[in-house]
Image (cartoon, rainbow, N blue to C red):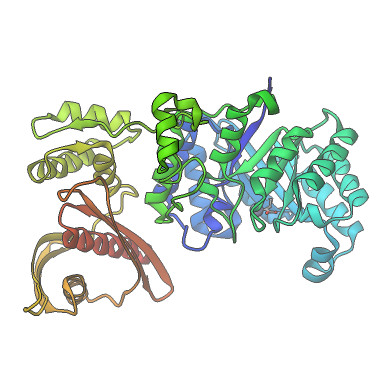
Length: 500
Ligand code: KIV
Ligand code: ZN
């Protein structure tokens, strides 16, 4: 069976989603999980875009073995050089360079002729090949490019040394039949001389369908992102394209190297890190993707799962919520479970997480995997703590003015403050601002319960803005107001780290 390469661009195109920016440590955590998931290529970033992007690509190249690490570069010498500097230490590395080819882009944005675009693309592929063996070229806005010209560019960059040619539907404009025909025409011209990749955006909701049509017509690589995040309406969703190939292998006769049991964990890790929630009815990873509400469906399922279930939840790593640990579980069991859940923590981080777990076990009888993930991911990103929450007590109710008494450690000093507010969260946030003397503004506040029951661990996600900087924070606790305080402090620590 044909193997389709999965090129994951969550850390590059995905990160271009409004609100999805990640810090370097967060990107490394995602990259490690992508390797566990089995992706073939990780596009780790766009090194020339910023020093932060460069660092992230370089650290992933140095610290995350197991997949090809790609760096994106415009068809310019300085971009390609920067991408090369970022990826050079990776055991397997690729430069992905691109130039627009549609008349719309060439005329209005770049003001260059077709001939100039072709010449530059050839020169820059040659330059990239002088640095690295594995070069990918993308004619940007390919689906709005004159087809004979597109084919001319594709053939020329292959002659110049590109081993993968990516056909991007940059603005999500094409449709499955049309895109299938385009890929077929390219395949007929280039045969096995290079791998055809596709990169589809979801503006018309067709990115997965277009990618599948391309696979049917000869594409050997799909560019996609976890949860389909990405520029505007997003990119082709990795879990959807992969599970289509798995579920309908009889039809597509193609497979990938993805370990599907890691899908849900990867999706949740990304959600926690970016704060971008998955819509409940999203295919494969949405909260309702396996929930059967109708009586007729439930009746059928009880008789035979196949009646209404085309994918086993366990195939993507979902299991019945299991009781994993309790009050009497020891450090060893806790450590083992964390490892099984896919987290790699330092001994110091394990100790912190274990303390939190013990405190939680005193408050909550049953502790589930999701609880542990929420506790552990509070530490994801390894931000040095300028501020830490020492104590908090709240008075609130129908006939009292909400008041928060807060103790916060700022560097090595403990400072306290008592503030009133419109509600308990407002009072806490006023107290935090008073103690930290920060000028942050709350942009977003989300609360969710991790598992069921009134003793459930509550998780709060906040987004803050201070000047031009933005940061997300996460906090979990059985007391939702404490979780809200932790989330705010976590975001302030990230802002402080960025300031430094
Ligand atoms: O959408 C696009 O065209 C891109 C290219 C850089 C491949 O992201
Ligand atoms: Zn894109």
